[in-house]
Length: 327
Image (cartoon, rainbow, N blue to C red; front, side, top):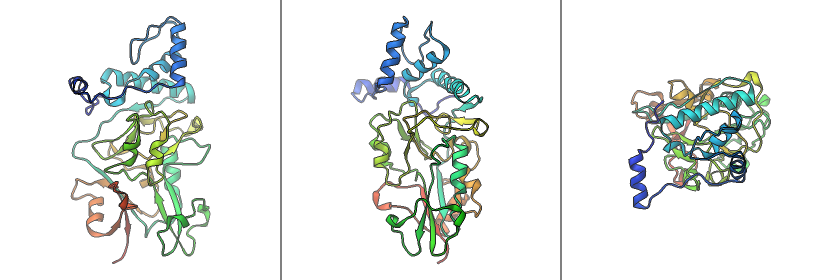
């Protein structure tokens, strides 16, 4: 599929002439070892996705991934080659055939999210649904949503219980605050990334190119919402639980050593479906939609309800709102 929002080659050349060149993929010990092995096999490396005669398919795929250019600069053929590599690697590593898509942002759509705190009962079903849908490793039980149990009458996050047992909810004297990526209009994580591996899409999603991420974790340090997490180990996913419909910027199987975050289930939302967490919520506390559609549920909530934004003083312009019922 065409990468409709990638810069043109003419634009890249113009940027280079003006001195505003985009940094190339950073080196790494793994990349150096791979290139050394390719050289020993007599391989001539010509650029991203170079075929390497004499190497196995898995070795060629690994070489292609290391040499892959930045997603936003790849042409149609390079993107298709990258998607094919991802699908082969998933079948090899997990024994499951997946489909990796590349659906671009939809014109006239800017996604927004709201959450009704008066309805949330802390079941954490949103967390479980997120883990399953987004092919997150099961070894640590961590997802892209963090639900905090809070004492009544306070917004003091230092008093939050991050590890309560969902079997006990709702707890007397407590309320629940789900926190995930706020899809900021001015994301601090994007500014902190030294290699431009994360950016904000035209439809409002803040995404990560896992093949470009170097795992420095600067984005996690910059994010005021604890919305980024580091993949310390190769994800462990039971074969029968892998979601096969994936997106390059979303729930495709990731490798160890990269950052992960909520992408509003890009593989679903760009096809007209709701994020998995929205569908899993048993109380209807979650509201999702197009901010540019005057008749959308998200616009109704923002125009008729009492709404708040978390840590708004940080100046990140979050596109995620919290709703409280009543006057």
